Length: 131
Image (cartoon, rainbow, N blue to C red; front, side):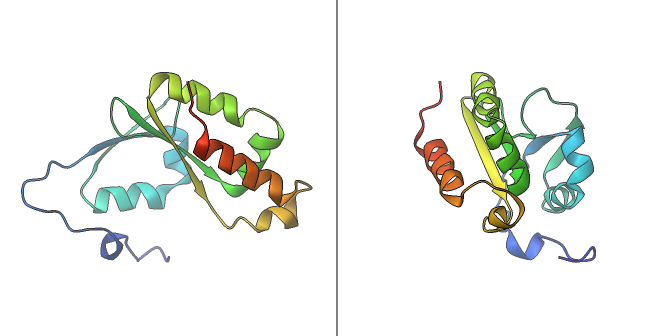
């Protein structure tokens, strides 16, 4: 997507008197994901940028999102703190989500981790009942 393009054509249209959401974005995340923040604002969300202790996006009192690029996902998986990070997020936000962004086959090219290990971790995350 070029700098001039927007996300508006790809998002559902607002209906009636729906209340616009307020999304809190971690300040470090906002610096690196300006297109995401721009897209949220274009769609009508109120975006507040704050330093967050846990999570990258806070959607409500009970829902937060941790956004990981494929390379970061692999790094945190290999250094064994991915699950710890998600457990801590789940302690504060009962509906903790992970958003994995990128092209998964790139893992083979840039790391020594086996793709089956990554897919196994993803399946464990999907099936795991976090505390």
